[in-house]
Image (cartoon, rainbow, N blue to C red; front, side):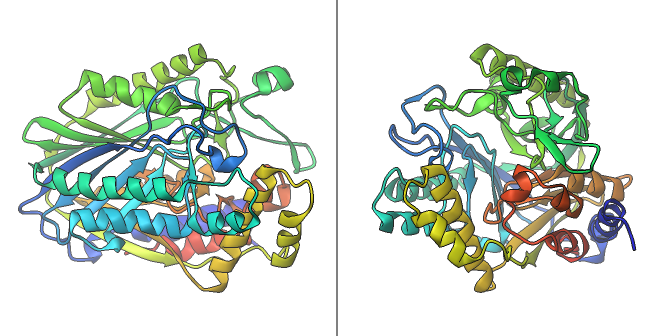
Length: 461
């Protein structure tokens, strides 16, 4: 029997290798008249809105605004939309509604739109299905303001429509990567018995300071950048890095956190280029080794991330963009069989249940009902020329998937955006399930999701 660690690397390597190594097996869509339309709009929640699904202090003030930023690629078949949103998560029907709104604005189909959250915690979770469920209980605080949600989608639709009118020709792309210093660490500390011993959280500096001395563990230390050019002019740059963006207390102060601040700093230094930040496979990665939950520390982390963005930017060497291929695949994982839906509902209705537990179980229940309806997730890949691939994954995927995908694609530049449809919550690798721990406890799918994601669902070509 193949050990679980080997299975992840061999199965993912085979499936993603087929996906990544040979985009020429599908006819490239015409790239003779390519344009890119960058867009951005405000998605800051109003005061009083729930943050992080309702289990931290609701919005009392705004430290810095939240944004949705993206690009529309025109001239390669139907328009393609990539978007990153400064929210905690967008799940299930809410994620579909986001994609539909952007598709309408861009004049394309929903299968050619990918939406990802950056996953800041002092920001909103959006799940229409779960919101309807908890509303019936009549016990606020709830998960989200539905009217605000749809007003945001109106703004998304209109912003994209207007952006397309100002689309710029795109003739070249460039890629680069740079190491990120002293931000990320693996938060899962495994004991000698092979089980989870403790989680290295962002408050470890005061609760378990001894954890700060442990090594960073398994991470991806590199920030990756993919930039689009009109001649020699850089018009859009997508940045990818794997870390939970948490460095501030959950005190009701809305914030785009250190990735948002880093993104704004490089935007100010390059005002003619739209910069977009995607959180990669960070399900088991945070900044717990380097945080102390202060604004000064947040600014320091932002500075280190900005340094990596700047270093990667200095390495960019534009080359002609000759082909664009967009592919999708459906993923239908099995929902966890324990606890049962009846047991979950009993927990929700139990007297004295905390808001956090109620809402988390509502999310779990929504996902199980979705699995029963056989309503799949959508994965996508954007291939640029024959040596650049942007992979778009759902949920809080463990970093091992990212490392294995990059290893499988030797000689190819692979950037990964996770935190797409967050319906299944965490997606650990199969090896992590018997280890236990928080992430496994809130993984809403059975361990077989590892094989599905690795072997078939990423075989987009």
